[in-house]
Image 1 (cartoon, rainbow, N blue to C red):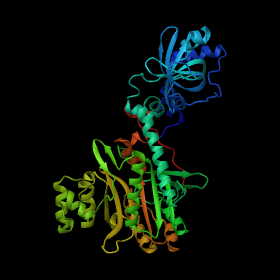
Image 2 (cartoon, rainbow, N blue to C red):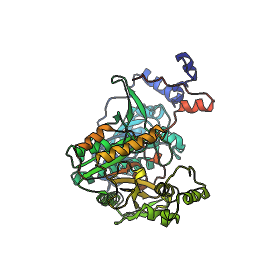
Image 3 (cartoon, one colour):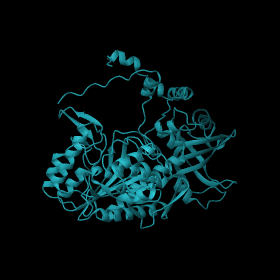
Image 4 (tube, rainbow, N blue to C red):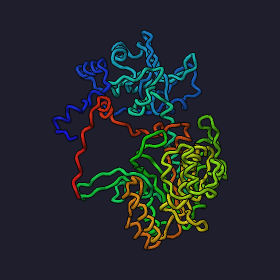
Length: 525
């Protein structure tokens, strides 16, 4: 359905309706501006963070310190006792109590605070530090400066922001009131720093490769499509940086990596987000077994550095990252966890087993190797709780991996599973340009037949391989899922600052039974 601009405006909810401005606060802003008060001054001379004050005055007594402090932050709690006020001030480093007396500030400033300053406002204070009778390190306030007037009210002080969807949509509010969320994202930042340090210490070089690509590749996934007006051509958001990083190996860089934002036009659930982060690593003159060793070292080092131990607890389960991690071929994993010896059964027998177990799309596998993948995905993955490398994958679902050196029809590929989640995917990289061309062509045939996740033919990449790529090992590791594990979160939305969500407008139209306006078509090439 097509809509004119006039017709579209009828369907679009007024964006201002989503604003949470508090009328009482707006009235105070108007009154303060009439008084000539600067509600948003450009700076404040903050000489101390709250953590610095707590450390510096850790041994303070009930006597006020001789040395003054100057700090700033957001007001979280205000407790008014008539001529005295206790308040909690917070910055990124922590919180501290304020002691505010009318006798110290004078009537005008004290009354100004009482009347116009509220929870959520940013203030700057100067004063001296002392310890209360209850043992709380506190700033005895001498001066107060309003630094930023909040016109949206914070959630109720004792319960924080508990609406899960609102926490994801308004992450800024979640971060203000929920320390657990702030801690999770501090951990995420430290994890990424540790990953870089691990690879830099081993002399890997970090590169940046294109996000907008004329041909998507490096994984089996449905891409996001866009259009470049100047070039007059369709482009895709990358689904993986793999093919560009391997071009760098062709060009002579032997140890490369990228911490990459990838985009896949797929379902959203607790383990998947359309925009996600991976680290991809390529190492010349190494193979799939070397990459398993590297991944093992990577994880054990990271877990020790972040948690101070080789074990973590996730959903009440202890998960050990002590080396060596378990390794199983896919064939042996299906035997152990599903009780099926794939190559002891005919294709018809395997299909009958699939139907008996009520598995979907049981008509799709056409060979024993395809049924091996099918039963692994349906009966084994979710049972792999402790870190387990699954290796020796069929060639049918591994278009970029080198053919196995001893097992016909298989490739030198592994995936690492932890708590039923795929965490890493590695290969002995395919460097035979003719074999790569054949496999791309097989993928392209699937794509033309309607497989939305099949890969395109990247002739330039094939051409790059034609110039020669040394034997190379590669691995991609999902950072979001890794952060989930290390922070004890069971949803990927808890570890992505701004996860993908359906827009409020789209949800409103859907609830009203209206069809969203059709997007304007891209110009033809």
